Length: 308
Image (cartoon, rainbow, N blue to C red; front, side):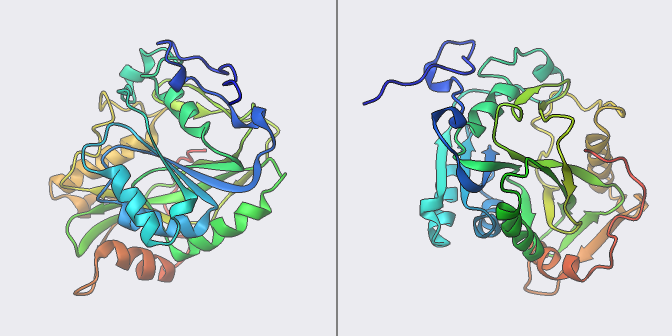
C-alpha cells in the first residue's frame, strides 16, 4: 500500500482523516463535471433533487454532516433507483460546522468546525476536471438538466466559471407555493478544479477563489428552484438574522419573504407569485415541469442586485 501523501491543508485539530489533500496532485483529473452536495437533514428533498442531477453530471459526491433523518441512506437509495449507484460517492463529515454569520467569523479557517475547511475537504473528493457546488434543496428543471449535461464537455480546458440563476420556491402545501421572481438570485456554482479555485474565509460564509482573468459565464434563468418549506426552519444554519444589506442582500430578501409568508402577507411582496398546482400534482413538480418552462422570459423583471 502506498503511503498517504502529506496534507495540503492540515486541520487545526490534528486529525489526518480530515486534512485536505487536493486530487490534482495525485495525477490527472478525468474529464467531466462532479456535483458536490454538503447535506444535513435533506432526506425530504432528495427524491426531487437527486434524479435530475444524476442525469446532468458525470458524478455526485454527497457529504453528510450529522444528519439524523437518514439523509445518506436516502441519497444512496435514490441513486440506486435511478440506476446511478456507481456514480455517487456518499461520505460523512462528523464535526459540528459553525453556522454562517458571527459563528463562522469567529472560527479559524483551518478548523474542522469552519465552513471553509468543510468545503475544501468536501471538494477534495472530486476526481473530475470541473466541480459544482449544489445545495440539497435545489431542483433542476428539464432545461437545467440539458444545459448542465452540455456544459460538462463544453467547459473542458476553458478555465471558465459558470453562474447559475435560481428561483426560491416557498412551499406552503402540496398544491400551493410562492415563487420569488422579484430579486435576481445569481452566484457562481461551477468551477475548474485547481489550486487557484479553492475556498477561503469571508465575513458571513466561505468564498471560492478564482483569478481576475477568469471568464465568467451566466446560465439562463429558469434552470432550477430552491425549495423553502414554510413548516421548517430554513435559517437554522445562520447564527443571527441581522443580514447586512451590503454583504448579504440575498439572505435579507429571503428573510423578508419568509417573514411575510409566515405572517400571511405574501401578496404584499413585489415579485412574489402564488402558484397552485392541478389536483393530484405536487406543486414542486408543477413548477419545475410545467410552470417555469412555459413562463414568459425574462423571468425576473425587477432590477435586483447580482450575487456574482
